[in-house]
Image (cartoon, rainbow, N blue to C red; front, side, top):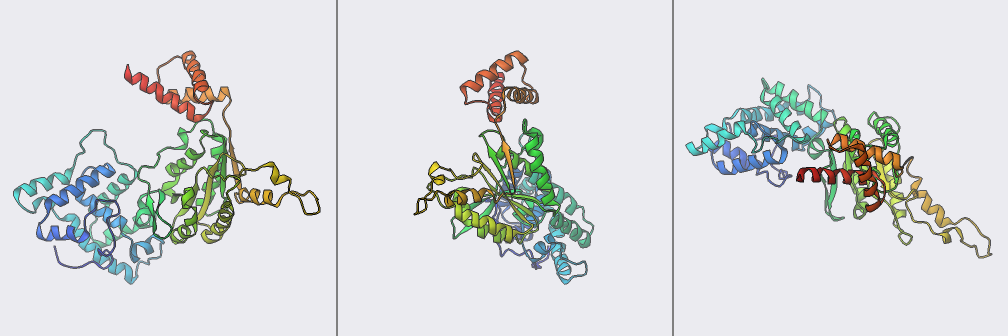
Length: 428
């Protein structure tokens, strides 16, 4: 291959985002000089294992490099601001000519006979176990690699990769749908959750009315229509957090992204907002198990941040929170017994301050514990889905006993019972 350098896809940014990618210049050196075949093989096998890939790993890895690279061209493409006759696109096509050469390079024809044999196996890689399957990210990588490898020329290549950036975006936000915060206040980053729960709304039982409201608001948000921050509150184990995770299963391909903000990360909210509002996605900031004790006052800071989020994020950011408390902050009777110095009783300013936090959420959805009839229905539905072979009478008896021994009726208790029954069946 030629010695031409890249214009946009240079190795001046950290490409080691997944913990195993080697230096981009080193991969080019391998193609040019035929050195370090073992290093390339180990990288590609680790890459395949992470994403459940099979087939031509070299082409899939090149597609991954293109997907993950954030540069002026990829970010402009994500925002859909690159014109067909623009200089930026013409310069990018020069890079794509190099990538086409790399895509078409026969890695099985480089190096010693032993190296050629080893690398030729990676052109049609087969996983070590039969039921290996691509995760969502792996499927996206494989699909793009197939399109790029079939490109007829640099124009076709540019059209295919530009379509990816427009549909998915660039970097981690293009490939993943759920994220968390890593690091301290001064030096933190938004990192992907690679083991996010893969649960859809069709797997939730007993909360159809609640999820219908949640989905309607989210769909309006994705369409650019007016939408509200949402508070999901109620008893534990009733599906509040799972409902929010289910959004990513159903709407990730529509541009929805979820960033989970833990209690220790709340102070980073302004900086997180400044990072994400520049990107061409719809973001939900997820505050799980949001509540405050009587002696905690940082709910005032959060309230100000929520107001700032609405202004800063405009139509790109919503906040969804879950809590066991309707008003988020624990109330005590002395909040209502505040006295003026002239002994005139008035409704406490403290109470009003606490209640005002919950009012920042335009929609509140209540998740209640199921009654016994609803609980048994959930158990039976989950048993059918998991092919549990047991009579209805025996299942109901077990469900009632489980309810007594394991803290009452809830969707979580029903799932735990089914998991136990599956383990019992497997042990027979």
